[in-house]
Length: 165
Image (cartoon, rainbow, N blue to C red; front, top):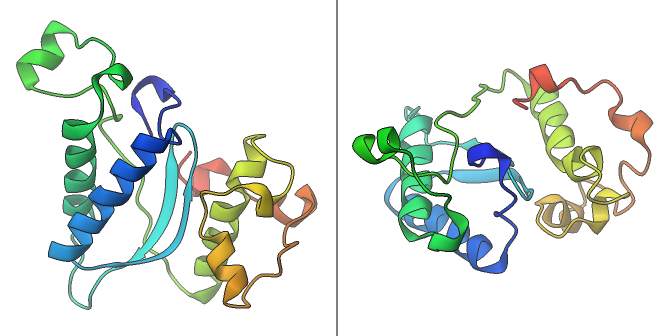
């Protein structure tokens, strides 16, 4: 989530910067992105880390750090004296939500929630209309149909408490 929920992530230069940050981290600390959605002020993703590696936090810290250091100044509000003293940026909220997937059904539910998120937030009326999502890759793989989740009833059981918002 961005600092004060500022809607900066879908700006073209920030999308590119975030893509670069992910690529750099994946190069040094491999992981697979199984599901992903980028929204204006937050993102959701499911990662698979290598066997025996559970350092999810380090990867997020490096991604957020790279993005913060290279993010154009126009997207950063003025830092308070305390933020300057701590050398903290005003791009991201200082925390994130993490959930370990328990089984195939849990994975499926979280993928569905991730892909439904742009509709939930009123950005589009159909999942397939949001461009910044792994939904399109999953359709190409034949896992979802292109008209998947065309109605709110499909995801009516989603609770924000279970998905980190």
